[in-house]
Length: 391
Image 1 (cartoon, one colour):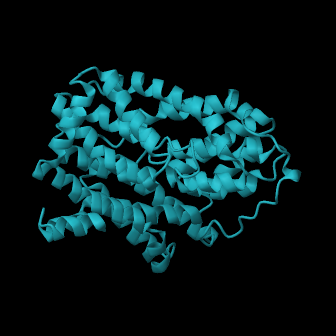
Image 2: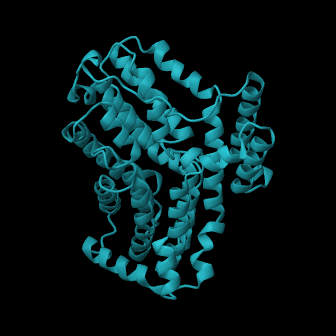
Image 3: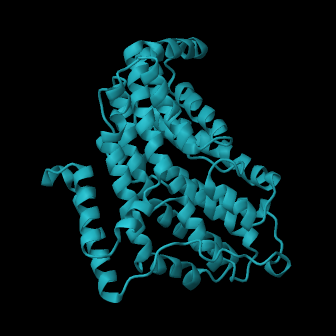
């Protein structure tokens, strides 16, 4: 809101332009996908996913493996907060200290969030809009984010199953305070018939989004049709649908989009980019550029919202890369990947804050297990991103 007010009050841009983010198709898509995610919570899909952990986790290592895989799946579909709220009460009943499970699955869910267009991943279309606003010539596809971030998820799961869990405390569950998270997962379950109908609607929505270029409909139109059908069929009530929309995220992106435009139109972005270019020494070394735009957001996201960090660095990464004269996609994707590496402090995201209190953990536990992982992820970013998105 401060961004919108400041831009309009100082007449940097017209009031209509300052408010234009609310009519942006990517912002509308984000809101619609929150509603679809709310519908998914009410179906049996998540129960089926949760059952994988209980069925196949018969050893500590397998429990960690499956809890990370399942939390990643929920993170992709909805977000990391939903993953921890759904899984924590279930995993507290397993014959292994929950301190060995909660931090690994939270890290996996955090990195998996927004890997696709599902759930919080609708923000990826906004990132693409920002990239193109700054002058990018090649847009992201909806699967570029999956391809770029999948290696990070694989690394996290392998690390947690081999080394990471050994660096975490191992207090038996009967010596920890009883976990009380009742009522944390909102949404009344559906009847059998409506459950099947909801799953069918969601499946058609996903299929339509995958083939949107073939059927000739924009993603936000497909998402809005899905939301309308979910409400008309009674799967989601009107108040439920409105309550499923995370307004802070909507306002954040609606406010940042005009800021991105103002950075470009006023020359402020060029001014900032020039100084960053000077700091980088006008280098066109892809590894140094990617490393810089991965590490800086990775550090800052530990002390601020990963979403805010993402929206701050996306336009800057694009501007700097274009100023240097290289394709900005790898730099922007590095900022995206770095911003979602929110696992070194409990301040990095709501999921980490929930994890710390539910474990319970101390900050030093986060750092002890998370720092080696941050180093490994930095190496992966520097090697992987320039390969798939050459500068």
